[in-house]
Length: 215
Image (cartoon, rainbow, N blue to C red):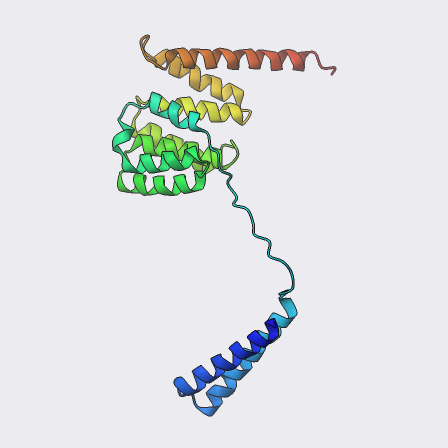
């Protein structure tokens, strides 16, 4: 049945292009040859008898709302007033990190000084890469910091991404410097202190484990 439909469609296309478009004889021969090549290609490569097999989307539903919430907590601005961030945050919460990064690219193109948008893009890129720190994410972190040097978000999340990538000492330097610049009454100081303490403990455990290994 499939072949009958293919041949009928080919004939219909030939008639349409030959008669309706009023092609000359030489043109009709070229059209016929092209259609025959198409049918031959279909015969060689197609498998109409096989069942369909749709491919699942690359990114799964179920994002990390905690990252979005933490970024808002560290923000020095009001992201609720930024429509780009509202849309991108909703996508990130649902695991649509690539889509979120695309939306945020529009935000930073419109306003290159939007530190929160750069930071949200950096976090989306890290999540999209399975917590790996890509060059694009590093650039976004740097742009976020350049746009708002006093915003604690960029060094905090860059440090987190570095730690997740195994670059523990670099993460510690960032967090220690951020803690030194953090006011005593800052709402994020306790969380930063706790994370830096956990990182120090992990670094110490790694050092002890390496010292105990036979040389």
